Image (cartoon, rainbow, N blue to C red):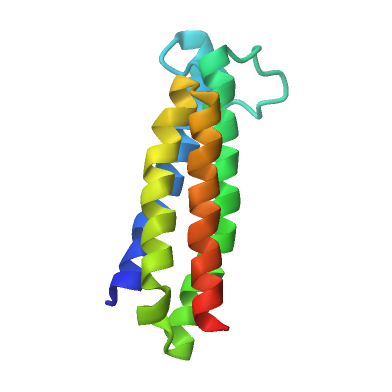
Length: 130
């Protein structure tokens, strides 16, 4: 497996972790009522705490980034541009690793800067294939 494909695999795991954190923190699933809400159809969720809301938004943002990252990885791999796109993929992945805890803690401007770095990584991947 190439390093580029390994990064796609790692990004899949990171996205899954973000989704789990978003659900657990959003619903407070360590409580009996939160667990009940998490196992329900989620028609009437309790109001999210500040941390729960950030976790849910961070998970959604991670899913959006994943949706853009994977096609670029696959096109780079299939087209033989994997080596050229690798640096951008690494920039994207590691910035997303940093992004998640920064968002959860609530550091607004730093979070936005890190998001910008991840977008730059996607752009680097795209331009490596053009």
